[in-house]
Length: 80
Image 1: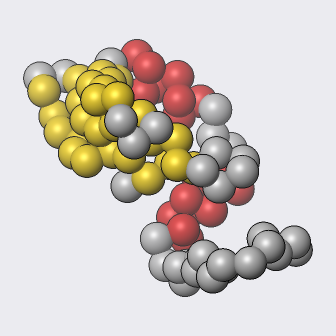
Image 2 (image 1 turned 120 degrees about the horizontal axis):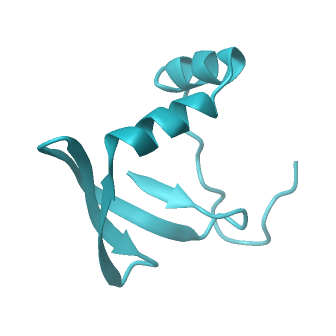
Protein backbone atom coordinates (compact mmCIF):
# COMPACT_ATOMS: atom_id res chain seq x y z
CA UNK A 1 0.00 0.00 0.00
CA UNK A 2 1.30 3.46 -0.85
CA UNK A 3 0.39 6.81 0.67
CA UNK A 4 0.77 9.87 -1.54
CA UNK A 5 1.15 13.58 -0.82
CA UNK A 6 -0.92 16.40 -2.33
CA UNK A 7 1.54 16.61 -5.27
CA UNK A 8 1.13 12.84 -5.95
CA UNK A 9 4.65 12.06 -4.75
CA UNK A 10 5.05 8.88 -2.73
CA UNK A 11 5.32 9.64 0.98
CA UNK A 12 5.22 6.14 2.39
CA UNK A 13 5.15 2.56 1.12
CA UNK A 14 3.68 0.13 3.65
CA UNK A 15 4.96 -3.41 3.03
CA UNK A 16 3.28 -5.27 5.91
CA UNK A 17 0.53 -4.76 8.47
CA UNK A 18 0.70 -7.25 11.34
CA UNK A 19 -0.66 -7.80 14.81
CA UNK A 20 1.79 -7.85 17.72
CA UNK A 21 -0.10 -8.49 20.95
CA UNK A 22 -2.55 -5.61 21.33
CA UNK A 23 -0.79 -3.40 18.78
CA UNK A 24 -1.09 -3.05 15.02
CA UNK A 25 2.40 -2.89 13.46
CA UNK A 26 3.00 -1.23 10.07
CA UNK A 27 6.34 -1.80 8.36
CA UNK A 28 7.52 0.07 5.30
CA UNK A 29 9.65 2.89 3.94
CA UNK A 30 9.25 6.64 4.10
CA UNK A 31 10.15 8.57 0.94
CA UNK A 32 11.25 5.29 -0.66
CA UNK A 33 14.45 5.07 1.38
CA UNK A 34 14.08 5.27 5.15
CA UNK A 35 12.83 2.05 6.83
CA UNK A 36 10.06 2.59 9.34
CA UNK A 37 8.09 0.57 11.88
CA UNK A 38 4.94 2.25 13.23
CA UNK A 39 2.79 0.90 16.05
CA UNK A 40 -0.88 1.71 16.63
CA UNK A 41 -2.06 1.15 20.19
CA UNK A 42 -5.70 0.38 21.06
CA UNK A 43 -6.33 3.85 22.52
CA UNK A 44 -5.00 5.47 19.33
CA UNK A 45 -7.21 3.24 17.16
CA UNK A 46 -10.24 4.30 19.23
CA UNK A 47 -9.22 7.94 18.85
CA UNK A 48 -8.95 7.47 15.07
CA UNK A 49 -12.46 6.01 14.91
CA UNK A 50 -13.80 9.10 16.68
CA UNK A 51 -12.47 11.21 13.79
CA UNK A 52 -14.72 9.41 11.29
CA UNK A 53 -18.26 10.52 10.59
CA UNK A 54 -20.91 8.33 8.93
CA UNK A 55 -20.23 9.66 5.41
CA UNK A 56 -16.49 8.96 5.72
CA UNK A 57 -17.13 5.41 6.97
CA UNK A 58 -19.40 4.80 3.97
CA UNK A 59 -16.73 6.23 1.65
CA UNK A 60 -14.07 3.93 3.15
CA UNK A 61 -16.29 0.90 2.55
CA UNK A 62 -16.97 1.95 -1.06
CA UNK A 63 -13.28 2.71 -1.68
CA UNK A 64 -12.55 -1.01 -1.95
CA UNK A 65 -14.85 -1.28 -4.98
CA UNK A 66 -13.89 1.89 -6.84
CA UNK A 67 -11.87 1.71 -10.09
CA UNK A 68 -8.13 2.32 -10.09
CA UNK A 69 -6.96 5.84 -10.94
CA UNK A 70 -4.51 5.67 -13.82
CA UNK A 71 -1.38 7.83 -13.89
CA UNK A 72 -1.03 10.23 -16.85
CA UNK A 73 1.74 9.23 -19.27
CA UNK A 74 4.54 11.74 -19.82
CA UNK A 75 4.04 15.39 -20.71
CA UNK A 76 2.62 18.07 -18.50
CA UNK A 77 0.34 17.04 -15.66
CA UNK A 78 -3.36 17.27 -16.47
CA UNK A 79 -5.56 19.54 -14.43
CA UNK A 80 -9.11 18.59 -13.52
